Image 1: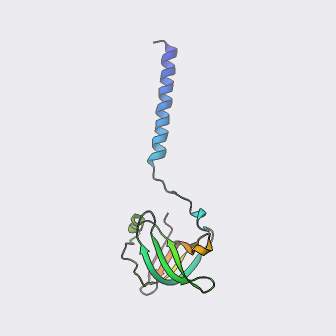
Image 2: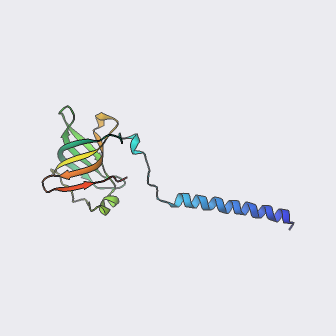
Image 3: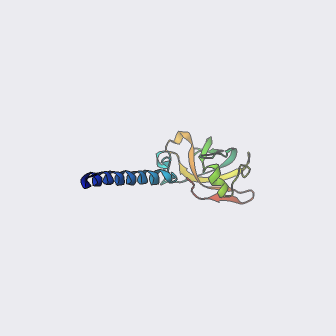
Length: 139
């Protein structure tokens, strides 16, 4: 085989191998940001609501709690509060039995962009009755 043909074939093979390596490395890592919280929440603001827990949905990819609490006008609302997934919360020592219907809680986090939805991205939750609390940001 002539040297020019052999060199061209070798060059194409090296490019193909390099391209496959890039694809493997890019797809092999964990996807940490599967969506933008900034699209749903004001990530530069925080609000706090205090009320009664009515539901704890411990699941993946995100857990949610529902809390009955007044809005800024004093009207009772059901707040939908987004938290980390069950697998992530387990690592933080939170399980499906950590919170119960009727628990009095204080929740702090980023407010949703649509105020009518009464959504919060959880940063901190406290149960004053026994002092239990969780604080952090889970994606």
